[in-house]
Image 1 (tube, rainbow, N blue to C red):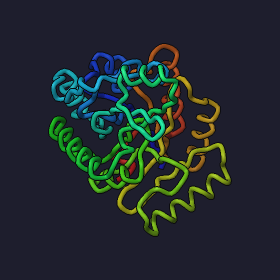
Image 2: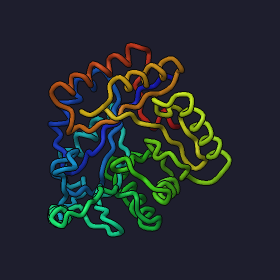
Image 3: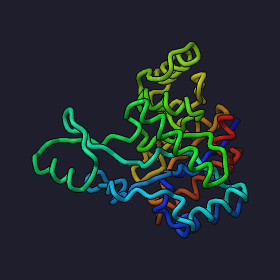
Amino acid sequence: MKYLVIRDDDLSYWTKPEKIEKIYSPLFKKGIKISFAVIPYAVKMYNPGDFDSMYQDVDTAKPIGENREIVEYMREKIKEGVAEIMLHGYNHLYSLKAGDKLYVATKYNIEYLKSKGEPFSFVGEYMDKYEKLYFKTGEGKRYLEDIFGVKIKNFVPPSNQIGVEGVRAVAENGLNISGIAGKKYDRELNLKGLESYVKRIIFKFKHPNLTYPYIVDYGSHKELAGYAFTPSTDWERYENQLSFCDQNNLPFQIATHYWELEGELLQKYYDFIEKVLSKGFKSAFLKEVLA
């Protein structure tokens, strides 16, 4: 079925409802559905999206429930049937991997590593151990369900990174996943999962420049790829992905961040959504597509 899923990441305590309203009111008025990936206890992030200058303040973690304005705004949109709440990690806190050591992604630690000339990479929150992630996933899910009065069905990995233990922690909390991570097989070991992996390999051989577009059923959970809509998107490849989904009656999931949508990119966003809908795609929440 040709469904259009629109996924917007990083809604949290730090989000101003005016920003969401400015971007999405033209779509909400048309009844277009948005699946929001929400961080339950987000830390403050500075210069998001720019890994040369981005850093976080570990002492600023805030539960989204303390921002009554964004909570009430989202509750209203849920009631109107145009917003879905999905779990987007716990606090979205990055780590810095330098050699075999991990550091919290604070300004001090980043400057320290740079001063030593030590190379490092950013590591997402869900590249951690199962026990820790199982607890955080369950607590975050219950908290958002209580705050927004909904049942959460889907998980969006912070920074689009998730390890095998993270997948297990998420699946055992009864959640599906937005996004298919990695080229190697790092999911639960069962016949369904292995069949899906073989299909992915065959697809990649036939279509090397496309992302696997089918719903993947691993038995304990399902996954659907999201296609990043950002300033660095390869638009030719994006259009080719849409064409394949259109021709093969498949869902298409846009994945973006509200804080990136402005100016020319925002207009392109509106135009692209209209284009997809004009091709006969039906607006849907991810929970409806993966049901």
